[in-house]
Length: 132
Picture 1 (cartoon, rainbow, N blue to C red):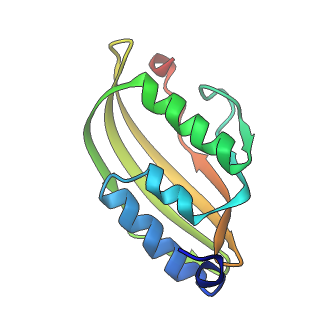
Picture 2 (cartoon, rainbow, N blue to C red):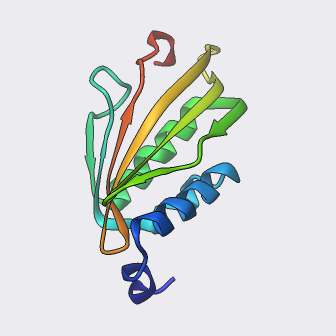
């Protein structure tokens, strides 16, 4: 995808592209929709840093999370809801971690879009004590 193409995308188009990656299980491919200086925010008490900055660091954070996962038993993602430069969707996952814990997770994901790219993602969920 070219930078010029991405800059012409509106928030709905970015949201739809993100949703398509997620429903196909291509979460890492979704990073092509992110700005180089994007930020990611996790709830207080979550595994890892609360704030991550920069696309390379976001990808590394995802790889670290993937390394903790043994199996994803099921995964659902809602269609996005768009408001201005933001979109949100919910995700439900049933995950077994490498430490043997099986954890159902539900989260609300909020994204900010500027110039056709995601510049911020923020996740809201109850932090499971057994995910560490």
